[in-house]
Amino acid sequence: MNTDRPEDPQRQRLREQLEAILLRSEKATSWHDEAARLRRLVNHEGYVPVQTRLAVEDLDFLTGARDELLMFSELGLRLLDLHQPRDAGGITSDAAHPILRCRSCMWRWPCPTFRAMSESFGATPETSLPATVPPGPA
Image 1 (cartoon, rainbow, N blue to C red):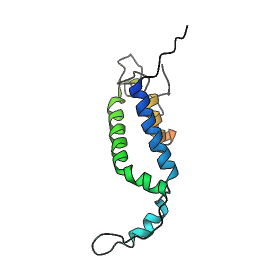
Image 2 (tube, rainbow, N blue to C red; image 1 turned 120 degrees about the vertical axis):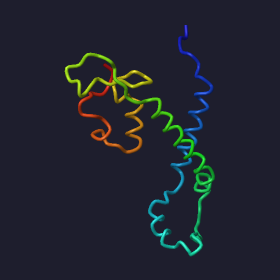
Image 3 (spheres, rainbow, N blue to C red; image 1 turned 135 degrees about the vertical axis):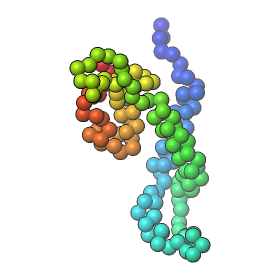
């Protein structure tokens, strides 16, 4: 008997879309180092006249970059709205530092979702985790 449920089609489509964005991003060339140099070339009209060689992967990335970044920003904000701390309501000996749980998933704060987001955006564990609250479920 197979107890595994089939993958949710909506979840699968979202996963495929995110993986496609990741692949396009990885294949594209970073403009980080060039941005400072190009910024000095802004003309009086506010534009940089650029003549450059772009690979097909760069064009694929640039085609959807703005829309995809807007989607990711919205996703991040929605996840932050869902996963935020709240007082767990338990009795504690330290009233100044109550036990906190995630409003959405009810894990001890910071929840795994918030930690994953913090790590993905480059926050170090020291800055993303309060020292008074141990990670993980209670």
